[in-house]
Length: 254
Ligand code: SF4
Ligand code: SF4
Ligand code: FES
Image 1 (spheres, rainbow, N blue to C red):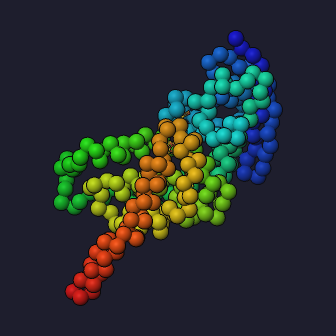
Image 2 (cartoon, rainbow, N blue to C red):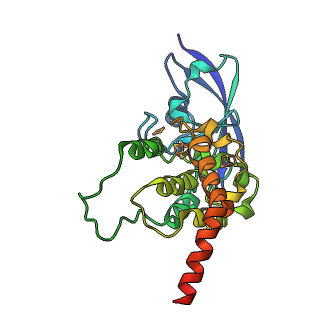
Image 3 (spheres, rainbow, N blue to C red):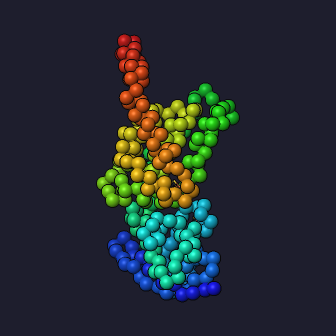
């Protein structure tokens, strides 16, 4: 059974904007993205929103619904009361282009800063061998659909524009963690770069990123905390410290 629902949608661009009120038809089985499409079709043809799959897999339709970072295509209207006013605003952490569309270029910059997987020089593609347990450890992280909801939510950048330069955010720290776990990766020290280039120290393991991940990836528990532990082990483990000292001495003697 259809009903008339109330929506407030942010309209504007980089120079400013406001919430606009809409009353709109809502039908059984619909999701928030359906309603935005209906507004475009009937009341606001120039309303901008980004979407592609309508199946929770492309990661394009990220927005804030009643203040919570979510995918519009995976947010069912049946989860709201019929007399509730539903507010849809653009992701807060990234600059607005128009209406619900933001410039998520920050994430692509951070992605490019992670040095790619570097296999041993003497192995050719097809010769890589690794234990199943190592494959399974990183499998979870590969479910990421790059919706950037975690990046949008993390308070280290959400409330601190000034941190964007030195902090890569949960999605890309997770990528560093994944590569650091990879038994065939020979790139320069991932732990050191996590700390010094990607700002792992900014993360205080609040788990807000994990809470909003539509793929239910345990970003904090399975990627960020273990990476932090490995960084600490490397820095403070007396055997590692001794090994490094001997290595340094041997190379300076040579
Ligand atoms: S756990 Fe770390 S990365 Fe995730 S939201 Fe909290 S501070 Fe940010
Ligand atoms: S880790 Fe989850 S929340 Fe973050 S970009 Fe990937 S799918 Fe989205
Ligand atoms: S439209 Fe692809 S995830 Fe929503």
